[in-house]
Image (cartoon, rainbow over all chains, first blue to last red; front, top):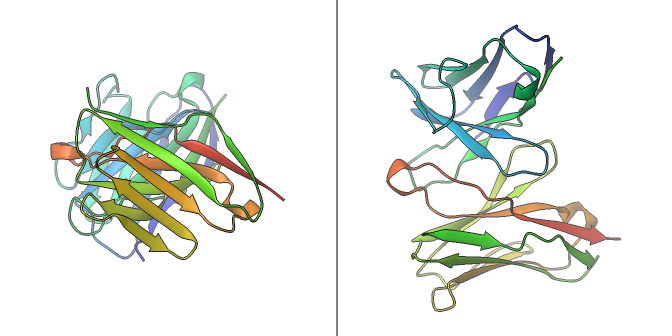
Length: 116
Length: 112
């Protein structure tokens, strides 16, 4: 089946530093990947749609200069949290779908980010 | 406005019983619904997709129904096991943007 790999699974960083999270589709090509954020006991919140070879599309309220997304190839998208603050501490999850737009999403296992 | 609703209260059942989770939708007619499972600290995992013209779909101990008259999908787990404990999410199509929006789902706890 389709596999999405996300790395790292956990990261702790200091305030003011930047953190990069990688999302790879291992056995399929993904022109589009989605980045979600989830706070404890809350639903997944879509942050942005990552488009291969073009700019990401951000959801309302998500700062594009803070959450940099790069989708450099058909199998890799990266999310960089710049100048991280403690309130950025959250669970970040990427997803992608093989096939057409009606096919299910496959998710990575998420990245637990803690900013101290 | 278009709305998908799942019971926000946790569902507690005894091992071996059938768990039934409800997903209601209002003000639109989704062409299909997807069901996902999410365990704590993990990404959601796709379980089943049921289209509006399908009354029922099964996969091992899982069964999903789609009632367009009641505007409801039911998700059943038969012979439930403690390992079935998780949050289950009912997700409508992404529309023109193909973006999937997730609610909080229903937390299922199967007691041994």
